[in-house]
Amino acid sequence: MNSLEQILENINKLSQTDLDRLLSLLADKNTKTEIFDHFVENKRFKKGIVCPHCKSTSTVRNGLNKLTQRYICKGCRKSFTVRTNTITASSKKSLVVWKKFLSKNVPIRNALPIRLTE
Image (spheres, one colour):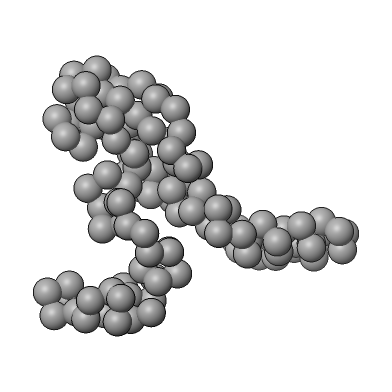
C-alpha cells in the first residue's frame, strides 16, 4: 500500500468532527502558507539551513514573520526565510494566484504579468 492510500484510509477513519476540522484547516490561507513553506524548506534545505546570501551553514532561528520562520546568518549577519530569492518572496499575491500563474507552462519572459492572470 502506498502512502496516498494510507492517507486516504486514515481520512476515512476520522470522525465527522475531525473531518470538518481537517477541511477547515486545508481551506485556511495561513495553513496553506505554512504547508507551502514546509514544502519549500524540505526541498531547499535538505542538508540543513544554508544562507542564500553567502552559502554559510552557520545559521540560527530569528523569530517569526507572519507565521514564516526567519533565520539569521552568523557569517554575513543577513536575515532570510525559506522564500528568500524565490519568486514568491515579498509577494503580496496569494499562493493560489501563483499556482494559477505557474500552471500556464509559459516561460517567465513571455508570461503575462501576474495581475492579469487573477
